[in-house]
Length: 410
Image 1 (cartoon, rainbow, N blue to C red):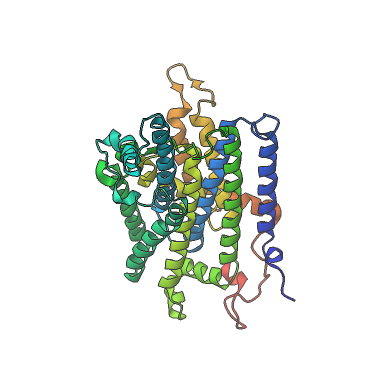
Image 2 (cartoon, one colour; image 1 turned 90 degrees about the vertical axis):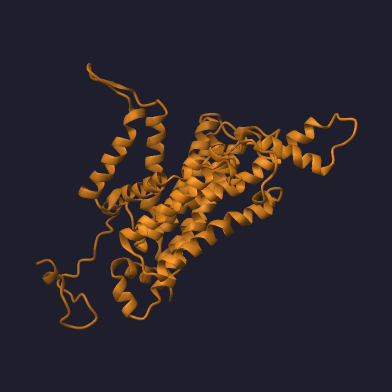
């Protein structure tokens, strides 16, 4: 009798249970719906952390399981934020313009309202016309569709061009980094249509919910982020738990052999690259309304490098490892850079963690790479007894007399 999905993947059920308990606990302790132990700003921090955990799962899927070290997945994360941010900023500005003209002798025409919106949004970059890329900005459904379509299409085109040319290894990493840098530099321009260096702001104000306090809105986004993380984890576990997962692991370990066995390697890689780009975009669409602002600096290549560091620290090749790494680094970073970590006076110099946090993060990455390549997730494997199988001299292949475990140890 075939076992159920959760019976074959017990860690998935454990993760979903822990996530549900965590979300319920934060809700009950929150300022909006609970006993006011956890502040609204902390709830937002936790909600954003869940979004970072979701993009870490995407990174682990594409790098830890498929072997593609992408240094451009934060570009998809940022694009998802821009797509939903356009709707949020347009509708909020529209409400302001309509409210400002409510007392006029004659009601404003739709074109006058649109002109007012354009002036309000783009006046900061010396413009007044709404760019064509904002054509669907007044439609929530359209912008939600673009959250998936734009990053997915970019990943599909980029991946098809790269994988069909059989670009691999460090060269592929450089290409993804170049793509991210090109997109970031383009968005920095004022004529990009997305307000250049100013980015999109005021995203925490939900249209139609002006009277709803931020304490409640933060809880709603926490629930949405938790639900997205749970679904993303389930999807990733389903992908890696079957034959498809075995094939992409094979591509990671020995791409030439998998190709020799008759598998269309480029198709597998393109699928994983595109799906993870969409997951990253959804995470970004949930993250930036909680952050309140997005600008091109969020898409800079360094952000994608940080993402790889999170996954490495948590333990790549383990979905829960990616989540642990992202959550750990995000929360510790908030503590160090938020001024909560006490400075260390040395007499001749005072160590200020705001300045030294990135150095500490880099040293942690080097230490994990050298001394604990399985990351924090590897420690959980040891504690739970999930060690490599002990065959005690059994054959390592399907045929008798194949390379044996004792021979492999020599």
